Length: 306
Length: 290
View 1 (cartoon, each protein chain N blue to C red):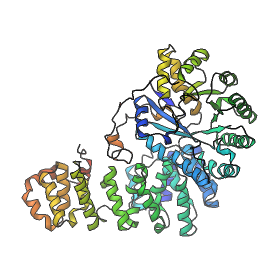
View 2: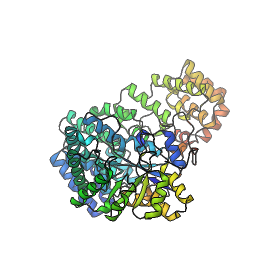
View 3: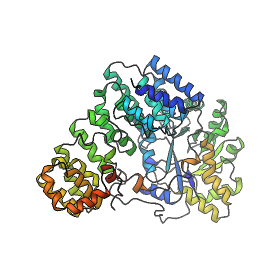
View 4: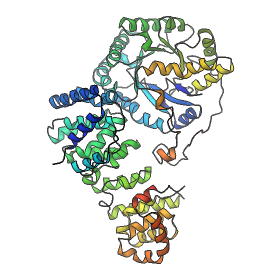
């Protein structure tokens, strides 16, 4: 089965992760622009980050036969430094929204749910309309339910079609409101903080697969880049139908972000099987190593993510 | 008089785009001419790929010949629509002075995606102030993204015309490092030099010490300058290399009177190798040793 991880921060991951993702059947990864742990203190830091999302990381992923896409945005946490936010919104983001492989404006939304975050969120919703791109909304860790509802209300206020907005990091408490309003409901399988995958199985059994998909949001924290393929296996083992698993772990994310026109199944379907010897011999990522021809190694890991 | 590169690119795109694509491109070219490097120009340079797509231009043999007639060494054979359109936009910029034009090129690269970088580097030989982009070209050669490196290094006359010796030598050596073929490097024979020959032989020794294969193309820039230890390296390859390696060493050594003896001693083996691989293109296309 083929998988898409529609939210993963590959910049924080190793080549070993790329190998494991490819071996597990992940054909495409989507990397939303986000916070990098250390707060940025000038516009140049954002520019470099955005450039590497559309440049180096995209190239790096291809070495492993994985297609890399990204989302451009100013994250909610750093939206709070008003001066910097203003510069990023006016000088930088408009230049990056039209780059190759940019499939959405994201991840944007609320963190502390401040007035400044709301201002930046609204400005970026307008940019998404202007650039005709879908939106990926990060819902807050704290006060999640209120933050999620508010995010959706604001998107609707701006006249954005909920079918073009992904509400991410859902849980049992938010999913119904999101689906009822016609938004896409994404779930992040992230150890110990967001969703565990046994809970995800129950969600799939309760709500079905329409408008629902999962991601790993793997980053520089303790996270699992194989969360999507592992959860797929767990769902199959526990009786979720193969077609539902395909929708939740592949097709729905493709449909949601495919509205950008920048990600198509043809990008990887029918593409020649990765042969690094032929295509990428001796490049800087693989220098001095044996290339992976296809298949590759799997990592012995626990299937259940709590 | 032959057409200019701008006229050629414009014509090729018109022949390949639908009406709305042509109209879009015309509008952007006009705006670029009239308004110069304003934010709209940088936006258009990016979004043109989404608007017009990235289909191969699939140029005919005649069109490829016209390219070389318009600008010697211009080889757009593998270009796609977006690359051609981006180059067209760059050429539509009214040139201010050299420094400001160089500044525009730098600014494009600062926030460029992979496709834009490739387009900028491919365009260098067509731009109006050749001296102005040397540092930019050297930067492209330092790139870790193969596609970017190859946009400067391969099928591009800019480096051989403009780069000083150190940067040129790094380009050739890096081709071997990353597995990019030397036969596509424009001016590879003309820019051969003794320092490069020594660097290449040192590199061959590193590879031998590590029991790694050596590209048969490596010898291309060695032969004319081979003397002393370098001559011994050529002899080692001619005596005990693989068939493509032997052909490479022989092709390279045969213009060097110092190598005559070596070639004569191994004449039969050399003849066999050259029969199988008579040209550098043939050597380059030999399957890489494993």
